[in-house]
Amino acid sequence: MDIENPHTPRTLDHLRMGGSSVLTVRQLKEHGITPGTIAERCRPGGPWQQLLPQVYLLHSGPPNSAERLEAALLYAGRDPGAHGPRGGGREAMVTGFAALALRQFASVPPLPGLPRIDVLVPRQRRLRDAGDVAIRRTNALPRPEEVIGLPCAPVARALADAVAELEDPGDADTVRRLLVEAVCGGHCDAGSVVAELRQARLLGRPQVAAAVNALLAEGRAAAEDRLYAMVRCHGLPDPVWNVDLKLPGGPPLGGVDAYWPEHAVAVEIDARTVNARTADRGYGDIFAEGAYGDGGAYGGEFEHADDDAVWSRHARERERLEALGITLIHLTPAKLRDSLEQQATVVRTALMASADRTPAAYVVVTPR
Image 1 (cartoon, rainbow, N blue to C red):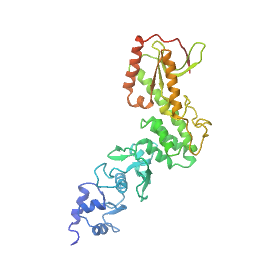
Image 2: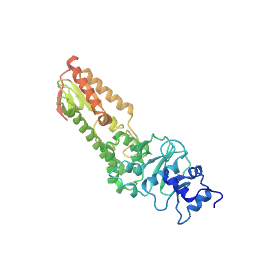
Image 3: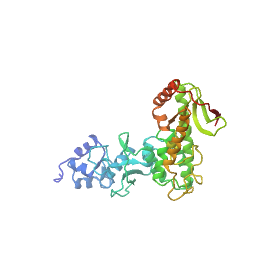
Image 4: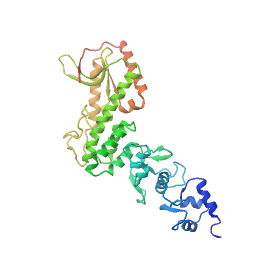
């Protein structure tokens, strides 16, 4: 009989039956299990095994995906016994490829095929990579999203952490598929992806630059498709699509995505949310020379155009059209994705209000 530990093997085995098969030293001690018993049961051929520092698996054989994830969060969590997402306290979350696999990204191998699990923690945490766990640090920990009960980094952040590992120029296709799936699959908008890539200083990589151009094109196309669906599914009158407006014999007033001439109402997909760092209304090559001020195409700090200048340009465009009696509505890709009915109501209200407004100036409408 083990005088130090009164628990029988049958009692120990009931730990698994009563809950998780992955526990920390602290949790085992709370069950009355001594360090000596832990060491004995983790000997070669024993019924337990140590997966990570201070983290144990209460059965022999390889851990499954759920056990790997829980072990990673227990290892990285500041206080595994704290209340919060299971297995990680409140200062650790799954990120990178593992977080994307949990969300069933088609362009990511399933969890059993991933050689490691990335975990995001605050920068001040003193943790090292261990086993199949890679520690990723951040100055500002994002709010985790719960996926099958586990805390995960938001998609855009997880995507940036995954892309950071794809350093070979030959990974360009993989990077492109990841970014496009994130946006076209409705997981996040292009603007948040570009912002995270910029924060991680990844936009200077050629394979990322090419992928972002594809992403912006796909994001633009997805937003346009949702705009078409909004008009079709919510009973709005048909507009003219993708047109330029100008005064007769005067300068161009700019392009809009939809225009109702009888109502003098225009809709523009807000370019700032898709490419918030360019002043160009179009969705061309954002890495072209001069697109980011004086920074060049791939500058070390990746110089950006002044946001205030972009906002000012949009404000001037809106004021110019409204001075002519034309109502300009900006719809963001995120709002078109998340609240289509609400955006349809905004447009419908503007169309109905046109009857009470002073007639708008005549403008020439031409295909864009």
